[in-house]
Length: 314
Ligand SMILES: [Zn+2]
Image (tube, rainbow, N blue to C red; front, side, top):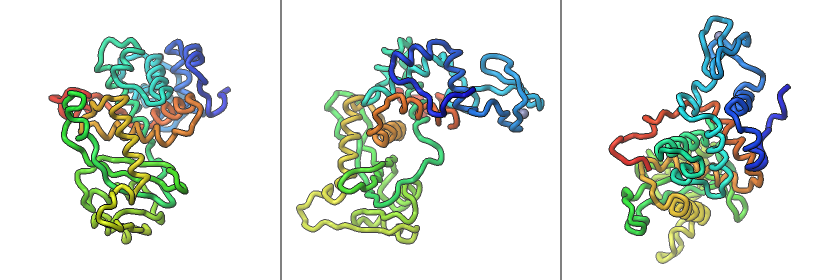
């Protein structure tokens, strides 16, 4: 029968031992996707038989159902053993891994394959219908990207603006949400807050007018204004400031600043995934958390990751 619901390897050795074959990976992953056994996605019917390694045939004549269809593994050319190792490296390294680093540890021939795998895994880090932040939440905007220019001799696009929401947990920080926004208008800020913060929460901002509509959207809006002219603006929102500082350090460290504005959201998703699980001591659990939703999110074909083909994928 099926093992405990949360069943994951404890360390690299265990991963290597358990998931040394594609068959073992498929078995594990199949249980994540269908804990109660196969069900046809078209009719829900349970009468089905395996037609091949990755195909099931529904008894209700719904044709062959791909086990990886509709997931990040759809149409992949890489074996699942590599995917599992990739997911392990992404979650087991404290600061994650760059595409070049992943290419090296997995022994992939192509940089593009490593980059695509990383981006698909990032895609899986955003759980559909995840909980919104609640309680008291600091919200502010920040710029990312511009400060790297010239420093590392790598071309980066001009600064990107992001919106940041941070749960206040006493003097500390709870969970966070981040998103790239076009500008600091209410049209950009309010939808971000609506997606990120549970109505009824206290949203704490500075006096910027982009936040004025919050009161009418079911939030308790608390405004803190600068007390003196020379007071640095970040003092108003210290938690957002800290989260952004850590984000910048991560972008410069793990990714050496080589993140274009166009792909920034994917990196924000990974940073958020990491940050919100920073107290988790069991790396294997992060691995499980990453694979678990990755069976449910829509696939992210390479084409959709690369918005403008003229841009180098970085
Ligand atoms: Zn069916």
